[in-house]
Length: 91
Image 1 (cartoon, rainbow, N blue to C red):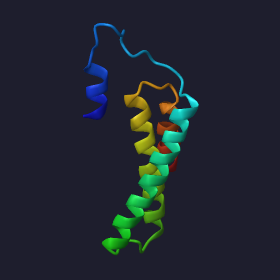
Image 2 (cartoon, rainbow, N blue to C red):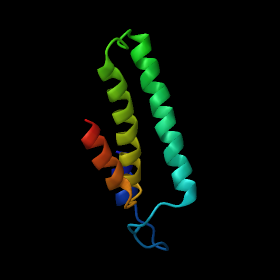
Image 3 (cartoon, rainbow, N blue to C red):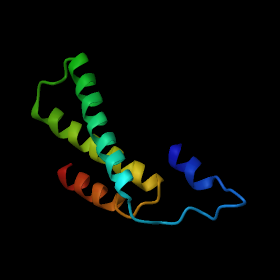
């Protein structure tokens, strides 16, 4: 829904949001999203006592990678493909 909102909103004084590379600020935001997702998924696994198998570690890391990839894709950043490919390889 977030990406759909970003891609469909239009402003009369601002052209369409073009595909671009990430800025240093967006790289910092990506790291924050990655770490936040790791912590959140770890907390969920711990709360439901599902941290019992090695696949939980893999799932936690791939979830964080895919969240960053989705966020970058919604922002139309070309680097989103790196995260998608790395996440797919790990999966």
